[in-house]
Length: 149
Image (cartoon, rainbow, N blue to C red; front, side, top):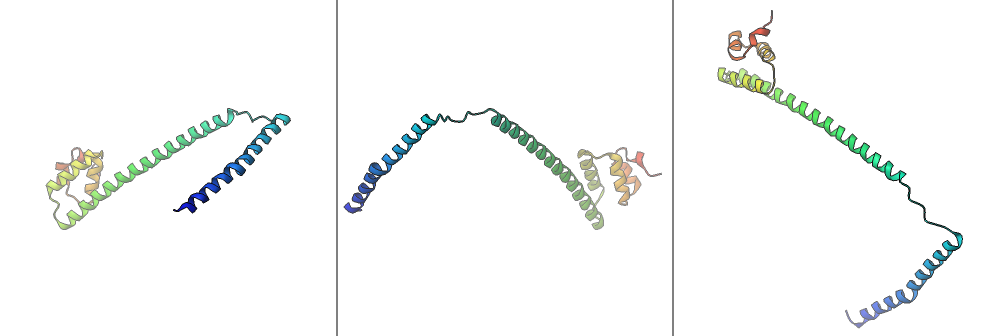
């Protein structure tokens, strides 16, 4: 970074000040005088585009919220279905292994009742899986009301 660099920098600055700046000022002055002569004015700003943008923004937000609510509903339904499927798979595996004793059956029924399933549906599902009627009646409250005829 010797004196040559500063000399070059000085020459560039002088070119900008002596040539570019006056040309720019003359251009702007010419445009200003031309507008005065021709009577051109800046376009007036209308409120209509702003209102259109506000309406579009509100519509976009409403669509986004609707899509979000729909996605959440689908996720919730999928989560419930997955939970039920996992519970049924666990029951099937434990039953085929012979490890599903009465205590595990009680825990399964309590969990199903806590998750909002109806006692009659639980009893029907256990009957479909081949559980003895006396164990179902002992574990599921109200399960005997929906016994098949």
